[in-house]
Image 1 (cartoon, rainbow, N blue to C red):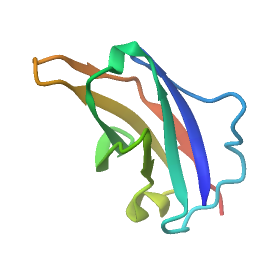
Image 2: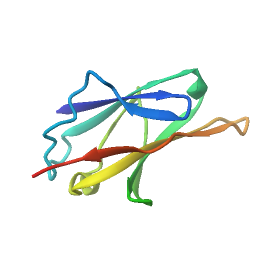
Image 3: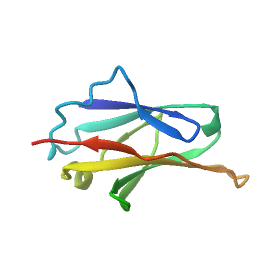
Image 4: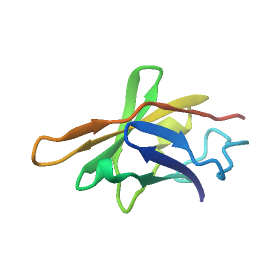
Length: 105
């Protein structure tokens, strides 16, 4: 299993600078995992990760323990974007910017 690490600082979502995002090969199933470091802005939120091709959502997965697996149908794409959406019961909602992931092979 390979873990792609991200930092969500407020609405900014970036790739963790010390994580290797090179040589990701498309087509692997149940192999890629995403892990997120979340700032205080995300406290108390239920957080979903949206996987997008351009502007169209392909799939969404709830975060569990700051992690989620990349869905198989997304792992088949040459490239995709991810973004986070967090909501709380009090009506608070936060949405991150998109982050681009390229897969080769």
